[in-house]
Image 1 (cartoon, rainbow, N blue to C red):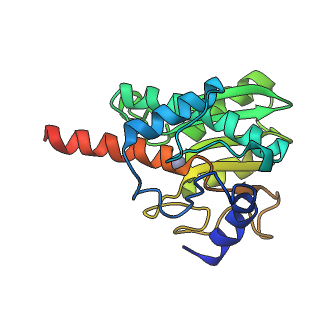
Image 2 (cartoon, protein in one colour; image 1 turned 120 degrees about the vertical axis):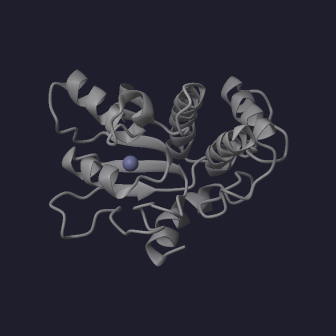
Length: 218
Ligand SMILES: [Zn+2]
């Protein structure tokens, strides 16, 4: 994990120190995917979660913005499951501004025959259409997997204020795992903040489950 990545994650980790399974760099070594997902769903329903993968029993320790992050990331995770259902790598994204979902996206490069059809790009396009503006100042983008270099560039072009991602991507992540594009450095003409590790275990489990099923078929 790079220095930048650690730095970005530290703030979020502190908010979840006693309960939330913060996992910015270990998302590919977690427990049973199905139970992790179940816990996320239970959490969404407000029911108590098991003391395991995604324990959300320390809400007292969370700031309102951290609770918001969990809420929106659950939404993005549901879109990632949709991608998996369509045979695409399970990544989901949403753009949120002022408490509203401006745009949703899930990975579709295979179906769309489009190498740019990553979840983030889909969500940015939908949000820009809805806003009537390709610039989305003040908006936040939630995505279940650390953005790649292409998406990091699009995020900065869209003037997104903050990116919140789930699992780290050690193969192509541009928030410190491989490239250090986000948070954007001073060479960009716009500053985008970045928070990693939100529901990283659930997001990572979805991906692992997807690739395991794919391997089993081949
Ligand atoms: Zn991407």
